[in-house]
Length: 265
Image (cartoon, rainbow, N blue to C red; front, side, top):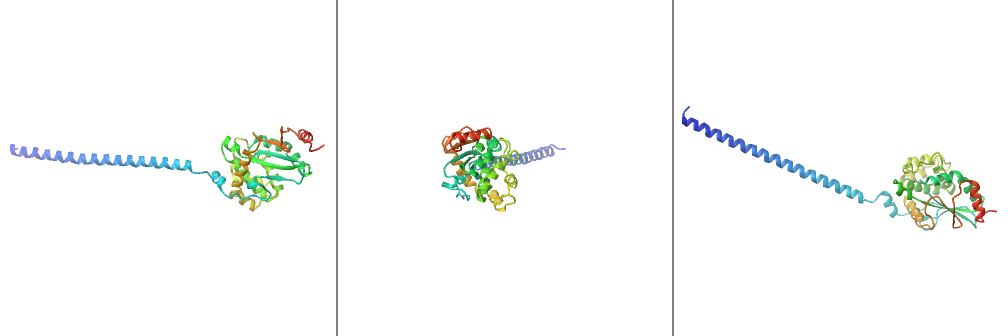
């Protein structure tokens, strides 16, 4: 091979090397652009996701919305926003119960002296008044107290008797969940309990009100009334003619409390 041909070959080789380097440089640049683009998209996606989560966190819950919604007052309720529930015809005496649907002590009281309390009302010894709170939802997390209270409103709309029987069923050994459990948040469970009450069994209007949350706003107003009640620091609380008493542990204790308060002789 001549020197001239050798030089030409070297020049061609250098040109091929230069061209190859240019192609590689273009590939590297393109790859960097893809990486940057993907990174930007990833950052934007993370930012968008974070923004969505923040928006979700700031979005009012269904119960927050219910607290601001128009109140549908159940039949057989009275007072501001229907937060007064009084049952019975007695002219003179009032027994006032303060409860929370998820409260195990309330369930124990209902199972022990609930029948005796209701009988005194039926016999005309006193009226029964109810203020029901939902504070255990906040203490334990969940929404069973609020949901059960809304369902009680649906039962009250059927009749005072349906309300009393449904409340008793909710507190019964068969249906009342443990304090930390939140079965009452499930509409289907509340309807299952209602099917044990004659006036509510397969009652389509009641079931519709439970599923639609018809009385959710009412439940929130009732909960507010509980929070604002005087001399009530927990559940259950019993007042006889506005005077707080110790919760009796048995029927004999309840009868003694009524005598001490001058309700019975």
